[in-house]
Image (cartoon, rainbow, N blue to C red):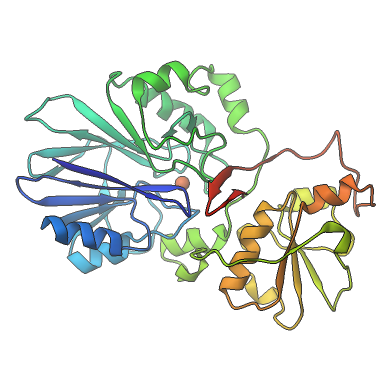
Length: 373
Ligand SMILES: [Fe+2]
């Protein structure tokens, strides 16, 4: 067999090329929108792409599945419950996909999303037992996928996690994310084993009630441009440009220099509405980062834009996206609303401190900086 994990550092995603070296039949799982990397591998190896499989409808990055499948006449596969408006080959729990001698066995493992599937990889000449499982965003390394955006639910995630943990110890786990917003506490390794996760995944050690409470705890900081990316992946919107695909340098402005001179300068707060309502820099306008692309026409191009969040990470990515979209005069407010608060300047609309909403953010290192989105 042939197996390659392809890591996308920009979005913290993993995709996979699996093939039979004997027959040359190949499948690609969870491809990124930049499909050139898969094209190069397929042609170098002389593989024939038969299946392109999305483990679920992604909310944080635009999938390259439709583009790849169309280019190769391959079957585009999703779980049968996927609510997309384009044609696809519906996969059922227990179904097997053949790639030469290899078998990909479908496990429906909802929770992060209702349609999420895992794929057990079986290579019968070596063993009748599975050697690997691709888990999408169900079981992650040291974590599980978040149920709090995109219609998931914690109860289903509990069942899916425990189903996966019944696999043999030796089964290698390859997740859909190694970093990024789809989990709350990923370890950062790109793979693990069922045995290790059963022993050391903090969520695997929780009983039902604390598991549900842990997964439902906090307000999600939804991914950048989620309200454009997720509909694009369902086919009801066409906004592949909503992906942040560049890392332009963004000037920084210190909190003491934030000028609230609306309408001459727009101070754009990209936190979630609950955070904004709890306390924001006076005059800041709220446009959550998840909605930035879908509501881009609300951001004027004729005046400077200062982007602010809680600590400066979400705002950096939002500012980079605005620059990618041609905004000429965008700066990032260093230290964000927390720096304003630390300076003892008054916040509008509420006190902060003990009752502040707990917002679930995910940090990861990328291109010279740590981002929290
Ligand atoms: Fe996901």
